[in-house]
Amino acid sequence: MQLVRRFRIPALFCSLAVLFCELVSRPYAGMGICDDWTYIHSAQRLAVTGHILYNGVETPMLGWQLYLGAAFIKLFGFSLTAVRMSTLLVAVAMAWLLQRTLALAGVSERNATLGTLALVLSPLYLMLSVTYMTDIFGLFAVVICLYGCLRALRASTDRATIAWLCFAVATNAVLGTARQIAWLGNLVMVPSALYVLSRRGAWRSREKVLFAGGAAALAGALFLFACMQWFTRQPYSVPEHLTVRGGSGLNVLAAFFHAALEIPFLLLPVVALFLPRLRKDLHRAIRVASVAALACVGLVLTLHLLHAQDRPLLEPTMRNWVSRYDVFEDGSLGGTPPVFLGVGTRVVLTAASLGGLLGLVVSLLGPPAAVPRAEGPQTLPWRELGILLAPFAAAYSALLIPRAATRDGIYDRYLLELLVIALPCVVRYYQERVQTRLPLAAVLMVWITAIYSIAVVHNMFSFYRARVALAAEVRASGVPDTAVDNGWEYNFAVELRHSDHLNDPRVEVPANAYTPVPQAPGGLCTTGLWDRTPHVRAVYGVSFDPNACYGPAPFAPVHYSRWLASPGSLYVVRYRPPGRE
Image 1 (cartoon, rainbow, N blue to C red):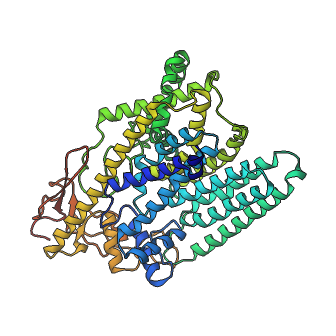
Image 2 (tube, rainbow, N blue to C red; image 1 turned 90 degrees about the horizontal axis):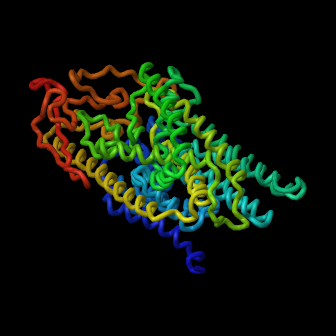
Image 3 (cartoon, one colour; image 1 turned 180 degrees about the vertical axis):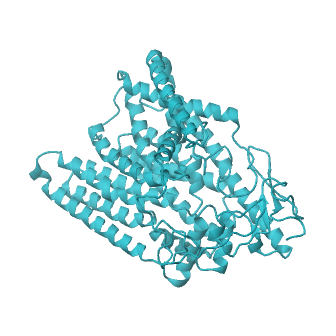
C-alpha cells in the first residue's frame, strides 16, 4: 500500500491506459483534422522563424501550445503526426492529474481511477488527444488549476496554502494562453477558493493567506489582460466577441438542451450506475419522468415549430466529433458517411444515459441511503466543493452563449470542461449515497467505452488517410490540388501553400484584410468555405457518393478500413459537366 501511495500507481495506470488505447488505434494521417492544420502551420513557422504568426483563422491564442509543438518539430522533424504527439503527451499527463484531482475532491482511490477512466477513455477525449486542436491544452489548464485549488484548501499550513494558490494562478495563466476560456480558472476558480478560505476561522487567522492569494490572483488577471491586448494586435488573428449579430435565443435554448442530453451520455459508465435507483424508488421515478417527459416534449415541439431544432434526439445528440458516424462530422465532403451507430444502438445508449440521469435526480430528491462513510477527516465538505466548482461552471456556460446563439450552436468538444466539473461530484455522490465502491458494472462499461473509442479513433484516421491517398491519385494524373475540393480541412492546407493567411472576413488586423471573392461556378456542387480559400477552384471533389454532383470522375475509388464495421469508400466526382473541366 505504501508503494502504491508513493508512486501513485492508480493515476499512472490511467495515463498508461490513454497511451495504450491511442497507440493501438494507429492515429496518423497526412492532412489536417478540423482546424488543427492551421495551428500546426503556425507551430512550424514558430520553429523556423522564432515568432508566433497567425494564419487568419485562429480564435484561440495558442500560446504555449505552439512552443510545445515547435519543440517536437525541433526534436523529431516536421510532420503532422509529430506535432500531434505533443497533444498526446499533455493528454497522458492530464489523465494522471485528473485521477489525483478526484482523490483530492473526496473520492476513494479505486473510484477516482474508474471515474477518470470513464472520461479519458471516452471517444471525445481520445479523438481530440491525437489532434492538434486546442481543447486538450485548454482543459489541462483548467484541471491543473482545480488541482492547485484543492491542494490549497486541504493544506495544513498557511505557507503551503499560499504556495498552492500561487501554483494554481501561475499554471493557469501560462497554460491558458492556448485557449482563453481556460483563464476562468484564474478569474473564477481561484477567487472561489479564496472565498472558501475566508469563511474558515477568524479573519486574523487567515489574513496572510487571503492577502497573498488575492495579490497572486490580481497579478494573474493583469497577465491575462496584457496577453489579450497583445493578441488583438497580432496580424491575422481572429477576435472572439461576447455578442454576435443575428443570434437567436431559440438557438441558445436548443444548444443547451442538447448539451444537457449529451453530458450524461459522455459520462455514461458513471451515470448509468444510477439506473437501479429507478427500481428502488419507482413511484418517485414515475413522477419525475412524467414531468421531465412533458417538459422535453413541449420544448422539442416548440423548437421544431420555430425551426430552431435540427439536431437528433437520440444519442449522440450534438454530432460533430462523437456522432452516429465514426468520422469528424464536418468535413464538407459530398454524400453521407457510412453509419457506425445504428438506430437500435442509439436507442439503447439514449435509454441508458437518460435513465441514469433520471436515477440520479430521483436519488437527489429521495432520502439519503444508509451508506458507510469512506471519507476521512480532511475530506472537503460538499458546501466548499460546490463553492469551488459551481461558479466556474456557471461562468463557462455563460461564455458559451454567444456561440450557442448562432445557427451552428456549440460543439460537443466544448463540454469537456463541464465534464471535468461534473465528474467528481457524480462519483463522490454515488460513493456517499448509493454504494461505497463503484460496482463491477462500471469496470465493464469502461472497457466497452474504451473498445468503442479505439475503433472510432482508428476509423477516423483511416478515413483521413484515404482522403490523402485519393488526393495523391488525382495529383499524379496532372490535376493540381487547387482544382480538387477535398473538404475545407484539406483546402485550408492548399490555400496556405499559396498564401500566408486564409481569407477570413472576421480578421480585423490588418484593416480590410478580407478580400471579397466571387463564388466559382460549381453547378450542382460548390466548395465549402470557398471565400476562405480563393486559390482553390474545384473541378473535382471527394465524396462518399459516387453519383454526387455530375457523377464519377475517371479515378479509382479508395477504400479504407473501419473496425467493428464494414469498410468505407471514397470517390472523386465531377463538379462540372463532362467536357467542361
